Image (cartoon, helix red, strand yellow):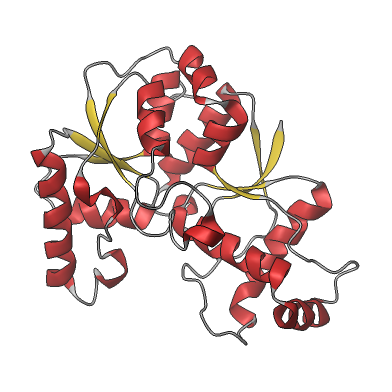
Amino acid sequence: MKVSYFPGCTLRTKAKDLDRYARSSALALGIELCEIPDWQCCGGVYPLGSDEIATKLSSIRALNDAKEKGQDLITVCSACHHVIKRVNDDMANVEDIQTKVNNYMALSEPYLGETKVLHYLEVLRDVVGFDKIKEKVVNPLKGRKIGAYYGCMLLRPSTTMQFDDPENPTIIEDFIKALGATPVVYPMRNECCGGYISLKEKKMASNMVDQIMASASYKGAEELITACPLCMYNLSQNTDGSVPVRYFTELLAEALGAEEA
């Protein structure tokens, strides 16, 4: 199975290992991630201006490329996923944006939000299936107590993202179970870590991380996993390391024996 792949800036620069884990794990599961040629940064933040189209064009180029190939568009970074999926929703439902963008881009055929946008975790759940992943595990993570950190962007706004229940998600916990580990549910797993203010308001971001880590530790989590590189950075930089923070693709590759691929 081939899918269009948007790695995003972080996974092609500071976090190349996370991209490598994603690719090798996908191959082990029978999926080929076909990187979109000449992709550009999605911007990292969804532009809220109702008449703003310039900062949405990079996402639309990627979406249209996937459409032309007849493939779904897969992202591994929650920030990229958030931006691209919301822009795609605009292109499907907001006539003014549709008109402006298609007039500007002069595509051979107007783009109207036809591409299906999926986070890598959704592919694991809805395309591969967690039961199938469990069968593929060669290094089960037995005895490890792992907390899922969802953060903000995967779940909200829920009507557009449609990723999971915004108040009580289970996808990452089900992923942890499939790898053979024990998921730890804790109250602060859906709260913002302050990643976007971590440079300007370091103290505030640090306090936000402290609350999340204390919540996870209190419930018995020995490590956390996340699906957002910014969250991973912020959580790792503002903690003493007693609860390590890792990326979900790293654990997947470890369990599948795909780390060296």
